[in-house]
Length: 416
Image (cartoon, rainbow, N blue to C red; front, side, top):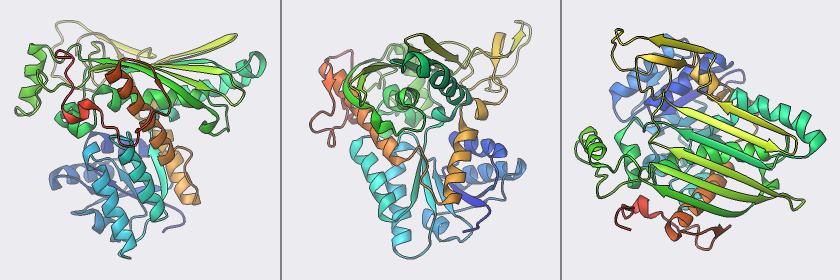
């Protein structure tokens, strides 16, 4: 490996890979060396983006093994769909074990697995071939989150006592690609897709600076989920049309709204609470991320749509639909917030900076596959709570083998 720069190969050439690549403008000592995608066209377009913005002369690859074998690639970023993760990681491990190539590390987008067994398998495979592992959870690296935590713990918690309640929410109008809507492919609905962010962000905020997150012990999980918008006939028809008839939300929906309450105990026996809310049925300017942290004599509040830049277009300004102002943009006229640099605001730049620095230093990143496993354990317990209609003590029995009903195409709130 180059001792001065980390050369990354991206597995997946879609929306999230391009988000990561754009963020690398703000990261030193890194190059995008290759892209592999479902189609060569997608891979070529994403590789071209890296060249256009000056973050690497990326090649297009036809297989994961070829990426591992290439001496010009030091690490892989797994940004392919959820249902491909195990297959991808198995091929990476097999290529390394066979002696065809070597890597320093691997980073994987959230969620690490569609269930606990998959998440643990990802961790086991990485450890089996001695790879450094990074869990790509951008929200714990968002500048407002990291700076807010620093201030609260330095000025508030040090005087008045540690924070005891964290609230986190992520809401938008729905995912980009049809497979996200399919419970069996994605692993669930909005609870799996977005609550993974909120659970980890809140856990991060409640953990003292410099401490391992294991100082918080989960005690119980209570959750609720429903399909509030997209199972309505009008909207179910839209999903069916967008997927060529594959997505059937009248009979096989996934949840578009979910909430959870997770109770933790500290090492001193104090009770801490995390409230999360996630939604694919939010109608607003676009993606809204919000966080609150409460302590004995202080509070913190973050909302990504409370931006410093806003624009207004009258009804006479008619343009084509796009996402040039904010991710998941829902309108092109009226008063709208603008996020001038989404990669920075949402934490992708700082996240990738940390991963690159860690891999170059030969250190395991602070946000790693073990965290991904922990998050998946909490999410699966939340699904248990939804299905059983009660609070579930953590850890519940048979968590390793649990598959949510929505991930088996067997969940339908209208028929329960």
